[in-house]
Length: 299
Image (cartoon, rainbow, N blue to C red; front, side, top):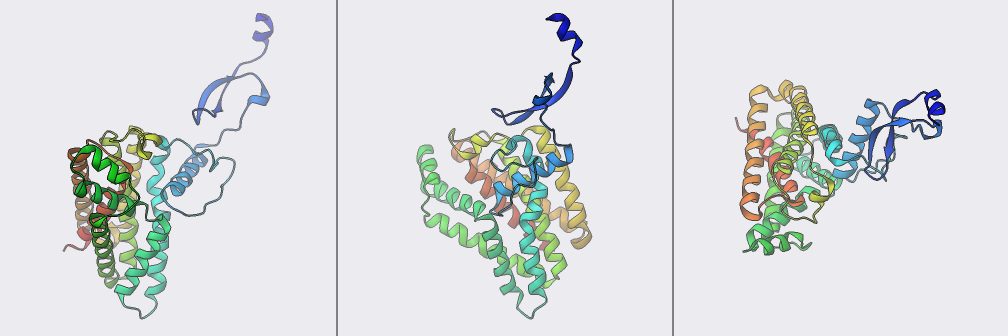
């Protein structure tokens, strides 16, 4: 047996571990066990597709053997491609602004339609989190009660008020950007989508889970390497999108305002419920996006 084993050359390769949903390094002796390994670019495309499906309702089919919607890559690693997926999520808004910008429609009406398209694209995922956070923090007096209210699918007065104010704020700010030009508005919306979702990942990573059975606790905390990659991509996209259109100063102020708001959401959540939930992460995205747009128009 030892002699026969020595005659067969051992090959190191990767195989799919279905239980852990990851590729692991292993010794391959049987050619039938040699599962094709996607290249790094294909893996990154698959991860971006997984983030697009997770954060939106875009009906994206499988892109190939490297992309299995029924068996997505671990969120902890795939979130590094969230900035790229955020561009696709914001693309319908950009198309709406450009197409309606060719008409004589007033900027305010175009902004209303743009925000409506955004809500349809994401399924109001983040807005739902904002409403739940407002209801829980505003109506609950104990930790258990706050978490109970946040888990309730019904919306209360605090949540309704938060939604109205957030949507009005986005509409007014987008209308202001459209008045400066469709190109400026489109670039700001793309940059805001990327920056806000990356900052929400930071909230996810920096706070402990407030609920053990929540979605945020189950999908896996982003690892440090993935968060660094997402941050680098975000900075690169910000430089490419916002700086040439609105200038370095406006892009910096917008990013600073978004960072301050996401930090404030994290601190409030830590004081209120001792950590984060999916609702907190969604609220951080919505509020930091509004802050970025406001900062871009502040001067």
